[in-house]
Image 1 (cartoon, rainbow, N blue to C red):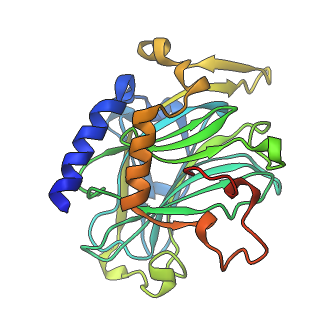
Image 2 (image 1 turned 135 degrees about the vertical axis):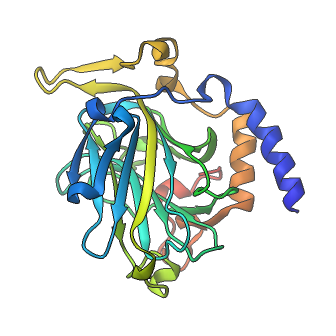
Length: 295
């Protein structure tokens, strides 16, 4: 089975990556603010690498300087290695306030040798509860891997190494709110969540393995960003080598090969889908789940 899956990965990946294979290198000194954790959050190598560290005293985090209104957000991350049980590395877009919108990647730590769990969620007007979870088909602690969010007026696409793992469609036509009116910043943090993160909180953080560190590189935002001075939105990438592709995300959807990859991921690696959790919704599934399709 493992060899068949490996062949499938290569076959499907070759069809879909297209022009999005590598995110352009950004400068963390220009792109983000270190927001908490003191010197546990560090910008290294002249702005090319960012590291977040968690120890028993505190975690750490950062946020983008800019706010975005639709776009494609790319980041390469190397997750906490070894026994990372109880830790969460989060990477998400969010607005502010009690009725905030949010698009989440969260990477739930594991015991050594067990797979990471990738937790995804979408909040609209302060309401989430739209979780899907996956295991990855590689070890995310050995090398950097690309994690991307495509957010346009039609849909949200979650991608790992340019392979789609989830699509959340705009279903306003059937009364489901969609995040489109609130600008969002990118946030990331490394923190202790051993009350729930690993096997529902059964496995606690082993502080003898601390400090825990995750690494980031090649942040890029092909996006419409909100000007802090004028309040107006401007679209495109600030990286000149990305200008030709900066508009692709505005209407991006999955073609036949993308849908094939999505089915492959959801068949072999999805471990939880809120739309299939009948016990959770005894009065009927949420409206966005009621049409037969991949989610």
